[in-house]
Length: 114
Length: 114
Image 1: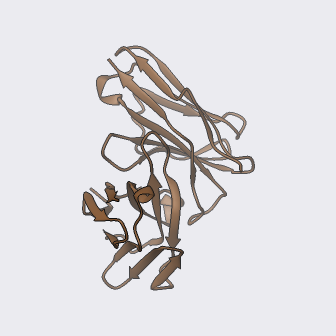
Image 2: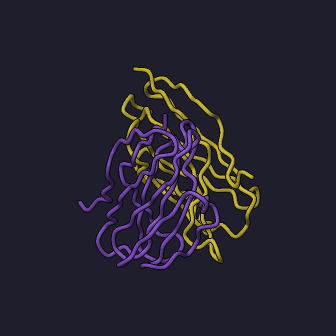
Image 3: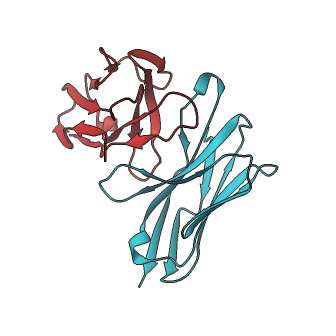
């Protein structure tokens, strides 16, 4: 069964350092999402891609976060500089285009900022 | 502003009992309502989903009840098992500029005692 791949699974960094997360969606899924999940809460969308284009980045803290999906396949989410409040699970999901399509989530990257 | 409100925050049920989790929404543009199950350290996985043209959907032991006029929907887990112990999230998405974006509830931590 096809799965969304993410790496690394865990990342510990010090504040003010740069971190990057990678996501490889299910083959054929044109839509890719990055969510942030704070412990004890539901995931919240950071950015949504349709192929290589950003569809929604309204909740992305653009002063420190950036995301790209250059070839419309895999994607990278970067934080620079990391802050203590960025400690969370970063989840990648993918789906076929269109609303109401099942989103398949990867295992996530657990980030701890010290 | 929480787009989807979920209750209870935690739920303890005996094996064989019925687990009920409730969600409410405000945005009438929402037209897709999935439930996700998440185990510790894992990404959310789709459990069951419903669209507003039906009032109920059943898959095995899991049933969604949907009340469009009240803008509420609920998950019922029949014959709850210890393996059902996980965190459950309701979510909603709709058309327009937020096409595909999922709005999650805060989650319900379910514990099923043997």
